[in-house]
Length: 619
Ligand code: ADP
Ligand code: ZN
Image 1 (cartoon, rainbow, N blue to C red):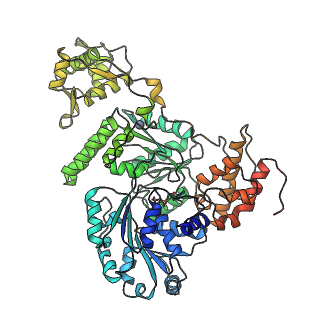
Image 2 (tube, protein in one colour; image 1 turned 90 degrees about the vertical axis):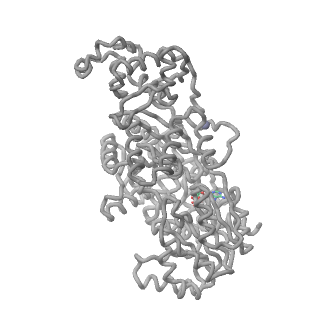
Image 3 (cartoon, rainbow, N blue to C red; image 1 turned 60 degrees about the vertical axis):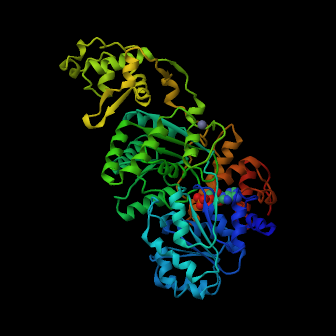
């Protein structure tokens, strides 16, 4: 394993393995089969890439998406590892050339789609010296998973045809049925399953509820402005929302682009490419976006609407912070979303499982215990303590006796004959002069105006709490009107006291961490190999980070590569921290392997010296 560790440093610039990586690699080197479950960003790729480098022959990597293959191959090549992808969109001559290289053993990793693989099982594969087979996104094999791909079900043939070659199947989807399905279908030989913790402590978790569209947009603008030049994704349920939101953000000077499956392919590809290459900071997308995108420097993910299940939510927020640096996630939740999602569930025909999943998601949004605990327990892990990095941990709920407040609200509900929704209820309580109120004679009710002391938003929050506590429920079938439950009646008639959690409007306008704000000035320039001008800042760290970003961007544009392939955010941060001023010191930076040291060492060291006002070195 010493040798393997040396390769980890040499090719990837990392000094130690993450939990399980070494065990999985050892298992592959022992020629045995395994199933690897790791969250997105957990570091699955290294588990097969390192053995592929170490073992003689070529590793075959099955991957469902061309974009994903391309990204991985680029990453490997940039670290000096001979890798290639075979896919149907390539010109024939190029395919032939790659096949030749494979047969000559000149490629260490060959990425191929499952369809492509089936076409080569009898021709190319037997002519190659296969070191190992890696099946990425292995959950695609299962109908129970969320990305079922029929082509994956044919992969059982691999074990039959190449019984001696170790197979490693990898996925970030954890549920039990899918797991068993993968093992069975692939016919793995005495497989060992590795399950790494699904915890992603670097992701902060925040949920906000009951925001109107306008409030959501204002909140998003504020959030993004506190994170200038950082990459982020806003997930929307509806296609039209992605476009509308991108436009709204543009009007605030934010570089945002829309992405959804309804765009013409060329436009979609361009949007993706622009985002990956940091030409746009923000993408407003449906869930069609993200699978197969390895961009490691996504710093935040916002859910404009509530997702339909915790699996989906976790996968989507998992696209932030793959490099392990602190990243923020924010979810907006409203009853409107819930109504829409419930309708989808009814139309799906699989209502049992899906509605249970939706219910769990809703409970996550409404919880007042540590959110990470809920997530981990959902994935079958126990968390021993509160995380300290979710909104509940940061602002623990303070309770007060809210009996009178609940009584006011429920009594108004009863007096209207249970015929009003949340908005109308609040307007009645606050004594609004809306015409409808007079039309229905609600201004004659005893409770009219009885809640003037609270703001609209406060009332909304407390009504949500009443729903959550089971004092009232929403009748979705009857125009979302409110009904008092038997438990609610007990509070209403004084048999039961109601404890509510204090809600403070100021705290809730922005309670996620705002520390992420870096590089405070607009420094983006059109590509020219122009001299880098550090921004003028009192903090040397800030100007250094900004200069390093500029250099990375120039190099990326020159090489037509995404910036994060040149160096991850984590590497830049490490440079800011360690301030390497010699090549030797630079080689100690996270993510700096031999190739990157040779290729970029001098320019980066020169730049760092320049920013630190040290004399030039003659390399
Ligand atoms: P996954 O495929 O599980 O989603 P990746 O393999 O893309 O995750 O890894 C996520 C990030 O973590 C990448 O930037 C990768 O280079 C980095 N990484 C993986 N293993 C290590 C390690 N041992 N030390 C430091 N960084 C690592
Ligand atoms: Zn927490």
